[in-house]
Length: 180
Image (cartoon, rainbow, N blue to C red; front, side, top):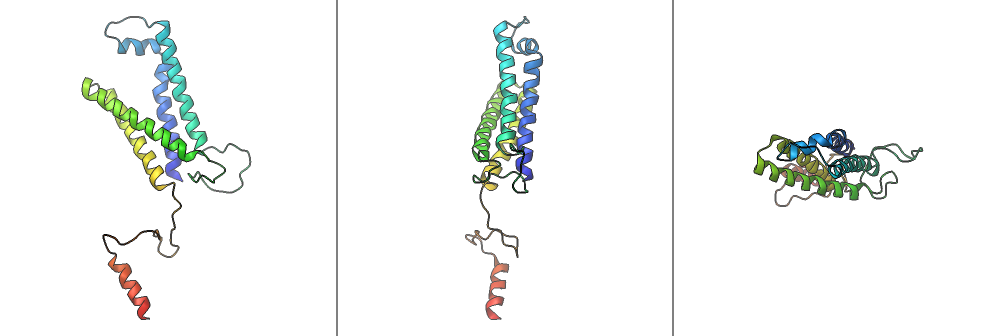
């Protein structure tokens, strides 16, 4: 599943992008956030780097737990990552998707609030990135986690119904088949 791979690697990349300045230059981050220019305290440097390493760790766990990277050296069957709970390659894919979806949605709401309050464009950038990842995760949870019953003949999902809109073409084909 290409969307799940995109989401897994996209989440890891986004978190690494956010973590890089926290790890590389916590003094600059503290100077940007404080109203007066001063040197960052030892505690601020510690918390900044701890948050950066935590973001990288969560990104790596996202990739590993969704099955994007197989954890065993032997693959029993060919195929990509799935969110099927019985899949031995990724038994924690759906819970991991759910937790990271909630994380991205919370960060998107927080950065949106900060953007509307301060008007700083970097918060808008964070809002857009986290909202896109939250939307993709929501799509994967809703549509990539169910076992669809896809018809070999038509390619449509067999569980769909015509309510409240009818499929007149399908009804015509059914009527033709009954008439023959």
